[in-house]
Image 1 (tube, rainbow, N blue to C red):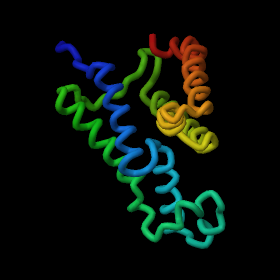
Image 2 (tube, rainbow, N blue to C red):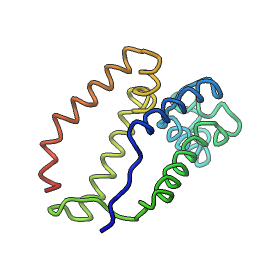
Image 3 (cartoon, one colour):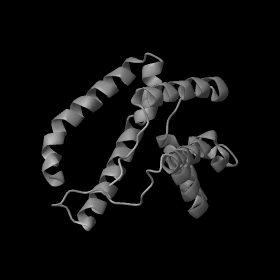
Image 4 (cartoon, rainbow, N blue to C red):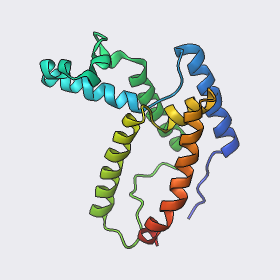
Amino acid sequence: MKPIRFWSPYIAGISIGLILVAMFYVAGRGLGASGAFSLMAGAGLHNLSPEYAGSLKYFSRYLENPSPLLDWNFFMIIGVFIGALSGALFSRNFKVMLDKGAAVTTRTRLLMSLSSGVLIGFAARLARGCTSGVGLTGGAQLALAGWVFVGVMFLSGFLFAPLVRRYWS
């Protein structure tokens, strides 16, 4: 089995920092991914039922643009996907697979992933931002909320890791 090659965490961290600075300079705002998903949900709902979508205050800010899917945030998500795929392909680490513990069925893993993704997406919108928006961008701006978020995120990881570790052994 050939060893898996990863980027140096120092190079990756510096790269993320430089990308964040470039985003502030070019777009006038930092990184944040959850807004793109709200934008896509709002645009999709608007296509299905324009009256209903327009009546929801939450989606109104995403529908003010005549072409919401031309928003920079939407293209950022596409760029993140292309960048991640390129990195995996160039490092020869790309492999379609499903990580799971021996005690977990494929169905359970997929259901856990889907429900966790929906829950964290909902929580990100309640918090008015995701890990990249609140943590990276907020932290870079020295916002107290950003630093509190990162601290609580790591603390939560340490507290909940023992609870889910049994599924991975």
